[in-house]
Image 1 (tube, one colour):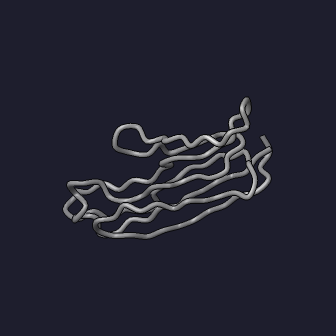
Image 2: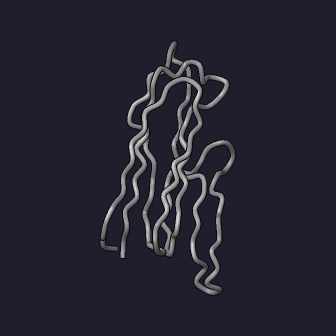
Length: 116
């Protein structure tokens, strides 16, 4: 695997939040994608923040049809994705209930490495 490019996005939030960021590619690409929490400040030692990949769309190699796959398992998005022929990735990040009011601030980095 050789890295041929990358995309990164950084977002800061506080309190109650659940947001998404979608990245679309003009043509299918091979990706290694992941989200990471850079910092979280929780009041009174409580609170939970998350970041991960909610869904992605890829081109099925056998049929040539675009397929959207939801990657959420349980309550949280999965943190990484390694896939071929990807046309879009949707990251999700935010604060988990019932502790959302105790998140003072959090930041997420969303990273995509293109490979060949």
